[in-house]
Image (tube, rainbow, N blue to C red; front, side, top):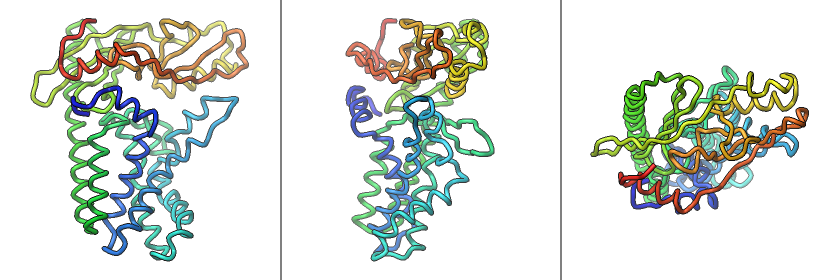
Length: 354
């Protein structure tokens, strides 16, 4: 997001409309348009858009008793590259009854295949992580190129989609995809710049990095949240890498890394609670710490409402006195006016007091 769009607006969009889902559909629609004949453009757009959404049907996999199940299976097998032909076939079968008067089943499947094909890849371009190569590996793949909500990327696809419908020319869709791909390449360049800056900054601190994650903050490619581990602590900072300005580091806080071997030594490893903690640590790529304000909450510190903050976006609530009870996964929405203003100041490359 460019500096003229405020953090509050982006958060409101994320909460109310789920622009990440809209972007999935738009990418599917534009991909389908690239193979459409003039009289098929509208049909291809509908099929591609709806097929692009189908991969996220995995959000329906959940349990009221085991709340971790939802985060484990979101962006799971339905996002794998090996599931693409089957996901496309399912989309085609579902859409065939309403599309059979316009186009043949083979064309419905082709547009479904194109619409579904990059759903997993697009999610992998964000920081959440996607089981892109399941079942070969259970590792979540995250390229950290763009935020889960990026208005520039979404608007590029939206304008392309609408203009392609109007002109009914496939080359417009191909041009739009090229621009979207170029934007992802800019994200890669910015990521590499931010990584280099924080590595130099950590070295100046006398820290040797054990693990590092650099991710874009909401809706932009200028300001990046960085988290690295040195010894038994996580250090959270923000790096602003402007396109035409010198990089700038906003120094954040640090927190003790959570270690289940020592911090949960009072609970049996075979207990439900202990296993839930291990599951959450796997999901969080081991970037887990005890919430500073609430000792019964384990936080995924990769994500926060503020670029250098330690208040998590989500975590699990544990009760050591009930080891056979599942941990509760919770999402926290505690954005303050001050944090929004500080975020905006960082985005504009202004001075921010720690």
